[in-house]
Structures are given as structure tokens and as C-alpha cells.
Amino acid sequence: VQRKVTFTEAPRPGPKDDRVPGSSKDRIHLDREAPGDFVIRHHRDSLVVRLEDYEPGKLQSTVAGMKTKLSNLRPGKSPSDDDKDDEEAQRKKNAAAASGDGKRFRISFAEVQRMKIRKLQCQLVRHVVKMRLDGHESPGWEDTLEKYIKALQDHVYMEKRSKSIRDPFLATGEYAVDNYVLNCNIDNILADDPSIKLASSLRPWEPHQTRDPLHNFEPICGTRSGNIARTWYHGFKNRVVLAALGGAFLIGPMWLMVLKAGDLTGLIATTGFVAAFGITIAYFLEEGKDVLASTAAYAAVLVVFVGTSTSSQADGSG
Picture 1 (tube, rainbow, N blue to C red):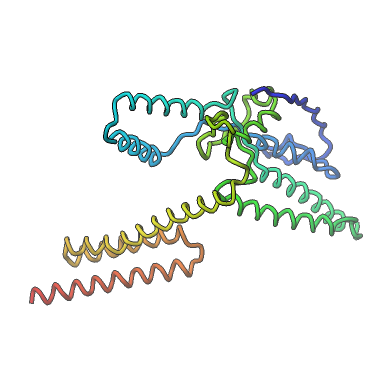
Picture 2 (cartoon, rainbow, N blue to C red):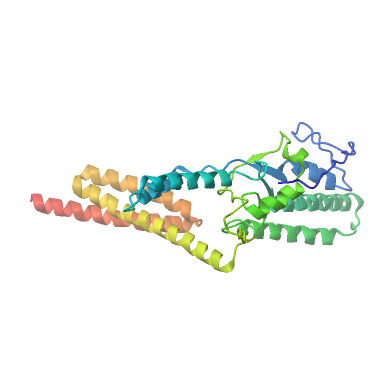
């Protein structure tokens, strides 16, 4: 990708005010009347990060391997077909790892929002200190407070949207169009900076060239129908996992206590499964009372089953 923009770094202003003694940021000086430069230098290293190559997890690799093996079992498939599939897989791998110059970047607008919050905080602190020292109202403090509250509310919204299928507050090279926009604005000096932070890729890199003559890349924020479908599928997978966990926690101890009948087995199985269930449910639920109620209900089910099993064994032996 041809980089088109060259930036020249403005000279940093000299120290104008106090520094934080002993802090790792002790060289970042704060101009109390104009905190903008302090805020930029404080967040500068996190504004642009370089993406590491995407590495799929073990589960994803296993599923992909199983799909490949199943596809190889298709009737009438010749060895030449295997070679073509391997060639196609390698082509996709090479395309996904390419970005024009081998580097992809990410910009988080949430980090920019945090810069705004920090700047407003500095201004608000200055207003409050002035009013405490002078005993008079500092002009503009109400507007600054209102902007600070609004910035915090916006940040909460940005955090909520980060849980979407695609975070709209990330300009990331993982998507082809985003990658083009970033490369048109990032010059070689920044791209080759050895001190730039690295970040893990969240998804496979979208190749910058496709076989589609229209080059239909992933649209920003996704399409409405696509987002609905992916959201439903994501929720469906979560519901399947929860159903499997619930069934395992109910059927597992019953099988164990039936196959390994005994008082000690029942006590150990009940204690272990209740503890595991409590930890699991605490991960999914936020309210403590909900965790307590769910764990108590599950423990009651196991206690009833243990009591029934013990009574049946006693009747059988008698």
C-alpha cells in the first residue's frame, strides 16, 4: 500500500509546571491552564498500535481440522482435489497475512475518549482549586462539569458497543477497508517505529484483494441483516453451551452416584458438584442474591437425590 501522508512531530514544550515525584510519568509536565499537551503525551503510546498475526485458538484449529478431514471423505474425490484444496487454503492464508506492506494497525476511539475525559478532569480540578483558594466562582465551571458528565456517559455507551459483533469504535487493520484508510494516514516513520505497542488480532485478517470483481468487503458496522443473523447465531451458541452445562451438572452426579453407590460417594459428589456449580454460576451472573439462590436450589436437588438413593439402598438391603 502506498503511504501518502507524512507527519512531522512538533517539538515538545518545556516544563511549565509541577511533575509527579517518583512517578513513571515524572517527565510529563502539566500546564494547568492548558492540559491538552499533557493529555496527549500521557496517552500517546496507546493511540496507534500494531497488530500481531492472528493465531486461532486450539478449539478453532481442531474444528477446522475436522472440517478438512470430513471434506476429504467426500465420495468421488480424487487426490488432485486434495492438492487443489491445499493450494486454495495456502492462498487464503497468504492473502490473510498480507496487508500491502506486511503490517496492520489499530486505532481505538475509546482511547481518544479517555483523553477527552482526562482533559476535562484537569480543567474541572483547576476550577475547583481556584474556587477553594479565591472564594469566588470560577467562570465556566458548570459547563466543564456538564461536559465531563456527558463524556463519562459516552464512554459507558462505547463500552457497551464494544460487546457488539464488530466494535464501531475500533479502526482496525483486520478489515480490508479500515486497513486501507489506516495505511493512507500512517507514514513510514510511525509504521517502522520500534517502540510502537503490539496488540493481539481479534479475528483473521481480511485479505486486501478478493476474487469478487466488485470487491465486496465487510462494511463498517456490518449490514442490518448480517448483524441480526450473527447476533442470533452467537446467542444460540451461548444457549447451547448453557444447556450442556446444566444437563452435565444434573445428570453427571446422578450417574456417578448410581454407578458408584455408597454414602461416601454421595457426599463427595454432592460437595464437589455444588462447589463447581457455584463457581460456574458466579461467572455468568452478576447479582450475589441470584448466585446464592441458584446454588441453593441446585444443592437442594442433589440432597433430595442423595436422600432418595440412600433410602432405596436401605430398603434393598433390608
